[in-house]
Length: 89
Image 1 (cartoon, rainbow, N blue to C red):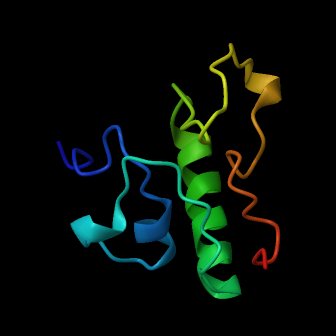
Image 2 (cartoon, rainbow, N blue to C red):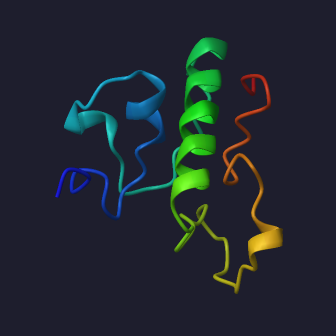
């Protein structure tokens, strides 16, 4: 379907830049430390839009993070990406 490019990968960087360049999608957790504040806001807006329309079916784990059961009320608005934070130094 139209979202097949997104399936099973982290699309946050691509969405933050409003580009569907396959090199911007990742199979690994992406800290997003190098995106701009504007890109961070864009990613946050995409996350909010998707969250309103679709059920969350999984989370991309950080390296070393253990899988667990997530309940809807446990899901942070930023999906664990710290999209509300400034860039980390």
